[in-house]
Image (cartoon, rainbow, N blue to C red; front, top):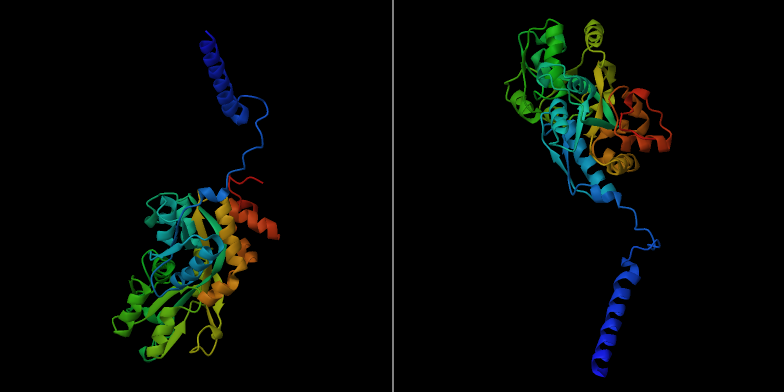
Length: 347
């Protein structure tokens, strides 16, 4: 009897010790739950890698994107791969569809893509993109060999002229320029490096591109043959700007290229970096902050980054901006147009 009583007491004691270990050390349902769990790390939602949509090899986009990818990795620790694409049109499509995280666009194709205008959109409104920072002005640039006799856009009638890739700014608008101005030229669309080779092989009478300055393909051509550069000026320029208001008069300074002896009047439009709408706000904030705080790295990649300054964010007066980017601009006191604040933005 005593033995059974002792065993029951021992059993009850063990149960008590077990209950204290489980419930007394935070597992119970009491009101005192101890210190609150730390908040979730915002970086937990960041992707392991990023992709940037650039354009064809040899153009400003591709070189600029290389510098941007280095800045992203420095600022966030995330590797960013640069993808060869057809340019702004293609980048709008790829970012909208979720095939790219980041991209580079000019405001003309951005307008058409966002509103589903232009044959290339197929009527699809590409609204899953958000602007994040200003890049630089795109200049409409045209050039020919000095011994060709071509010195202006009006001399291109009856000639074959390169206009960049089909999805790029030049590939989209330069054929339209020629048509609007009644210049009966034959546009040829391809990547800039291919067009430079065709030009040097005398398969083209002239070449053109729309990008920041200087353009690597133009420098390559000038290193092998004397060339003349021309733009779009006078009545032709006025006609184009009236037809497409996102193009505006601008000047290529003589300092942009060693072979220039004077400024070249032409038309231009702004470039913006874009991000997928669903990229985390905290990540986009760090990317934008990194770009402006590492401006020297951007300049090392391409001279066009001289215009990549926060104040130029206001050059975008209609394309919705990512909330992560807005947070950065508001912190440093840059005023943004009301029209760029998206529905998902929370103060």
